[in-house]
Image (cartoon, rainbow, N blue to C red; front, top):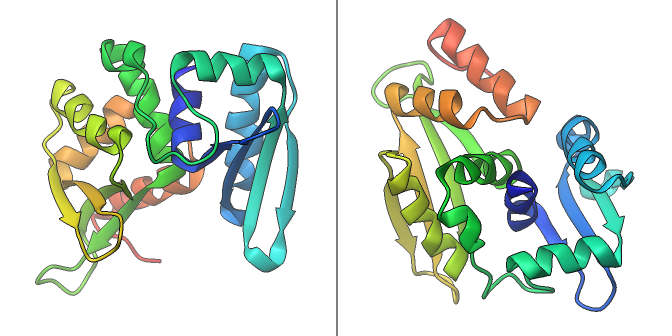
Length: 204
């Protein structure tokens, strides 16, 4: 359930009026939606999500419509519509094991793994980033990372109407710790990480 919360707060949406939960991803996320997200809904709620995609938008969607499921996530603390005022559920904040599962869902949907050249010719230096508009949730994220002993940097972009918070975990040791602790399930991100780990650099 904690992982599903992370997924919903990452790329998900609780519909404002009807009892529908929608999770959006790129076309590359189709396998992740089918193999992982669908399994989480099946195991926890015994429901099979609906899948659809829009090639022109380059997007893949997964949705579940259920009053029972909607009420469950609202009771945890998630809110309908805009996520501007949403917080990480308290039960997750207070439990390190649940926090790990939550971060897995959040990273799999809304996080990214990038590599820079620094002063070299090859892209070898790894960076994990989780970016979001300023909200109670994005502020809570820092306290969870601290509790789990992750070294991270925080940058605030004030150029937009809503401040953007950029959390970054960088360097080989820190990124390896992230993947060993959080154990992501999004195959696209995992494959990218494994390629870098094997070769010492990342080549698209």
